[in-house]
Image 1 (spheres, rainbow, N blue to C red):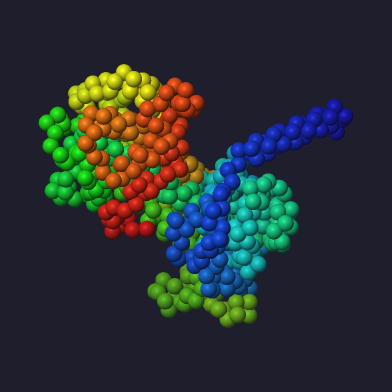
Image 2 (spheres, helix red, strand yellow):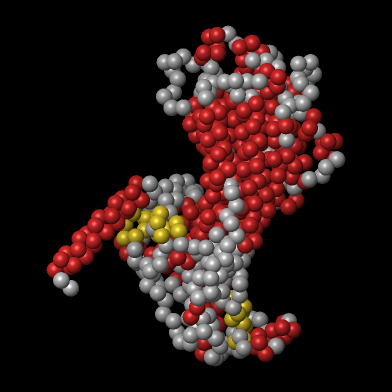
Length: 582
């Protein structure tokens, strides 16, 4: 190599190192560490009954996890059966056959270096997301195979808050290895970087501080789940989506109070004529929130019919709840079952079903021997890694949420504080407020500019990912569920929905004050009154210019909704329809 070329290469490496340093610094600055408020709680993982609330407790709030009886032993037995299958000359994908397009190549494939193909930028900034991925892998480890020390290390990393630096891109949703699993596997081996209690450092150093020994894991770095990253996105989506829907219901009830709306569309006798379970449920839920309010009193000035956006809000919200329920059901199946290839079926025998005794299946029957301690079973290639049952529900919920948001945006436009439509409201704020009250109330000067911008972004993020098949890896990996994209888009729409609801909430609270001034005898119902009163402690109804906050009211409202679940103000109500039980 000539000197000038050598200098060029050296300069390139210096530049690359500098860039890597900048990327690392930026990643550290934007990292969202968890707040381990539940660190004293311990949840038992059995592989069969993990709930979304438990995922949140561990991933977001630092609760500890431990394996239930027999889980570690089962993973060891599955590993032993794989080894026995190899000894009996049975073809086993990933053991004595190569991976992907190398699946017909004989031999014992060596695992690639842990950091090779470890995903692509950006680094995942949310500790909870990587922790949820690791947790789902740990919960399903009883369907996989692994040595006891490797199986235990996965929980040890969670319980000591060693969180691998992982990358957000590198998966088509058909097993998430490149995007995140390889990063977890690197931490297992003491390679690469991680966060230890929220502080970035080399993985080897974090393991040393936590008094843990590195282990070369004999299973995918995420543990027992091939799609744990997409599963984690979906589980967090279920939790945060529920909070958004709960606020959508309560905010709509407050809108109705602020607009002096008609409640006849939600009457039980109306709902009985069209029995969509979740729509009927949401109507009864909104009516229950409004029970005891002035909307059930006669008012000659109340119009016969509100705009369609107000009348149909409970229908859009009930439909979004229905999609949420289907998503939750899919998540619970996914995080408590096997999505592996190959799959080891311990104890299965040729006599268990007709197909198992055929020559094709007998090729994969492990008779049992010394390595498996006499255990027998099958090691079968599967398609369980395909997450379409979950991916479809993620996208369906995203779409349903966006359709709900379309109604939220429209009803805000009808009842804008800046340019209210007296045809619907019956009054203008200036009809009942003094000039001093108008000036001192927390109205939004140009809400339509911002909420329509939000709505445009929701439209963009809620568009379906085009169905795709790509003949990757010599045509072996030729499908793509794109769960990462679908999950990331849906989580973004949930957050945008909360921002949109913040504007709606501001609108509702403003009009509730106007209605109270119009008639001080008016009542608003227990839950809306509680939410309204709590917000008024943060943003008083009357403020002088000197006491007004120096940040937008909308930001305060968004922070209020994020920090205070609607369930604080409406903790109980009609039970979910049967299919929506957690």
